[in-house]
Amino acid sequence: MYLTVKKTDGTTVANRVGVADTFLTRLRGLMFTSPLGPGEGLLIEPCTSIHMMFMGYPIDAIFLDKDNRVVACYDVLPPWRGFSGWHRDAAKVLELPAGSREKSEVRVGETLSVEAA
Image 1 (cartoon, one colour):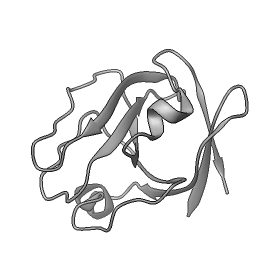
Image 2 (cartoon, rainbow, N blue to C red):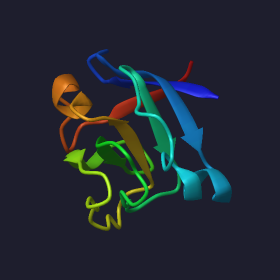
Image 3 (cartoon, rainbow, N blue to C red):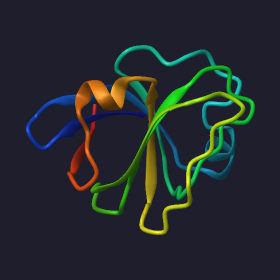
């Protein structure tokens, strides 16, 4: 299943977003995968924090609450060394190619639209 994620102003954040919503897909996440391309991402649900162990490339992470309101953003989390904080209010995380969050100007407090592609 693929999703499209947009800002409330209609700006597309990512248009080829996979979903990790089972124990095994959440456990694997993006570990041992090739780098994400432009427009790609992974939505992990449920999720309140992430680590970058066994990752070979940096990513951006956008944490969302149950209503898809942005509660935290991390830019360019480095492979092997990066960790996010724990976000009690988060229900999911959108993982994107490094630089995507800044390019799409996603900010804490705004709401994203998550739609089936």
